[in-house]
Figure 1 (cartoon, rainbow, N blue to C red):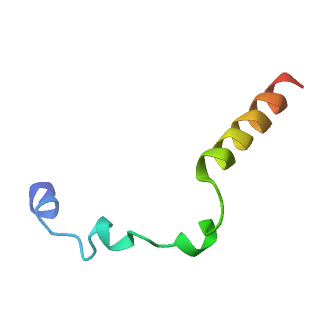
Figure 2: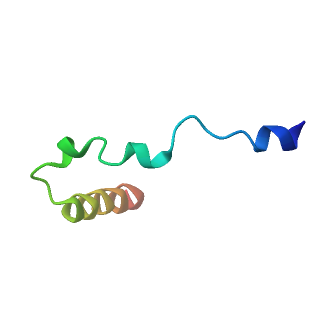
Length: 47
């Protein structure tokens, strides 16, 4: 029964999500965003 469930194909392919939300990042530098998040996280851990 478990083996049978594992053989069922998913209804969606993860690649169908490619580009989802790209409008949110328009005009933003993703690396700069990550750097800022890391700096905030490190500061929060030090407080």
